[in-house]
Image 1 (tube, rainbow, N blue to C red):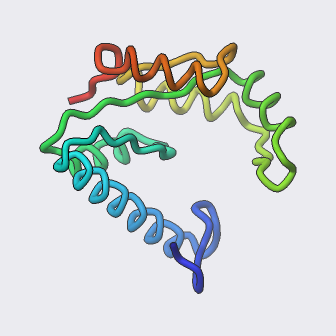
Image 2 (cartoon, rainbow, N blue to C red; image 1 turned 90 degrees about the vertical axis):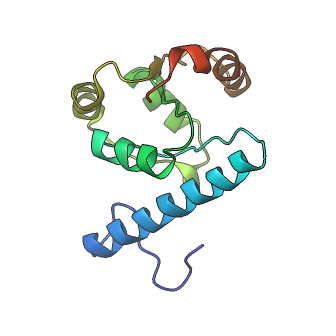
Length: 139
């Protein structure tokens, strides 16, 4: 939604990138709250890099039941999926091992760590709809 002055989440200047990401997340939660108040079940698809950021989301959604699903297909699946994306949509990243270890340390057993390595996007969505309410609660 930002055109002039947009800074990618990991871009520079870092303080402006962080400000824009926080604004995005506040708006995502406000929109989700509005849909929830109207009787819909919203889903927020976002990168949640830390427990602090998860708590930020949960605070903004505090009047609602929160579920946390981590799509965790494993390093090999992530690397393979990146190779089959349109080149304009690829995210080149070489430190999956550290990211995986950091996320496990940061979140522990919070939510549902869902191995999607052998599933299609439709199969993943179907399982989330069927199982998340019992496997992924965080508050």
